[in-house]
Figure 1 (cartoon, rainbow, N blue to C red):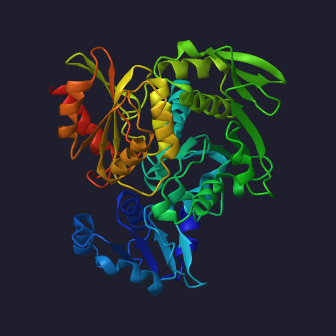
Figure 2 (tube, rainbow, N blue to C red; figure 1 turned 30 degrees about the vertical axis):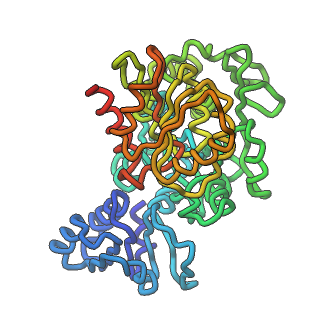
Length: 457
């Protein structure tokens, strides 16, 4: 790893673009081995405290903060880009190397990496795989999107370590290497503000497999047939499919409420779906099947996998049960930022009576979500933010006589409607189908406030 980094850095003008969690760990790794290498750190936050702290203590670093920080890319020929920064309208100099933690890390550790991506489910699937491996006593670590930054983990990696790497489209968009085991759960419209088009978003996601070799594996959702069409025609890896229904091209499937794994051309029952208490819903069955296939490929037995699934607890903010207050069951699904995730949440929680929706409007198509909700048993809808206003206007076109529609400027205001309209013993669900950053820093902050209000009723 260090020799690869040394070769990459040699005689380069180096820019760390973005100084969030990943940018800071990039700086720390470079500095730990190359203390006098000149670096530039550029970030759009003109008051960035960590960047200023580094600038005051490191004489070999140049700090650029503020709106013009992207101008630095034309002054450097090696850029470590943080995932959240979009360069879609910027043309780089042909001699400039656009790199990232993901690129360098996979160049070093791809053969021992399980990479997981998808619009929805990647955090749950990554966490589940890591948990199953850990419970089975395997040497493993969890890095990436919700784990620790990849560069922060390098000192603990041994040849036998299995690396579980949650990969967003932002992390994958510029890589030229793929993990040994890649998982592609699904692709839906999201992050169009970053990528500019759905086609660019698709291309970023499919890089999970684009550079795999013949001894690598791609685990893919066969129930979203477009996924296979999205893949490069030159794909070399072995494809392992999973599905809610048995078919000839599927290695893991559900039949009669039992999840089966095909081993040696024979279906082997793994677990009954009613034994899975902490991962509700059909969408989680996809996550479970992907995890079963990945853990099987690294040598775990069915009993080890079963024990891990049964002892796993679902993630915070993903269909998280908050509690029973004022006669109402409250669930927090703040992580659902696209329509498909909210649809699955409502399908999973069939007693939902009140649904809180909306947030930042990224131009996503909400027609199919509203059409589904009109036909659902949900009676009360509380819309928030610009996305909520657009959803409400679509719903009003249907003129449903059995639905009650409200608009709120805050979560606190939304709870006034929750308490006056939600039937006793039923569910109030926060599943916004929209990003949070018109009013919150992230979906965690939104979910935490929702839980706090509910618990203080």
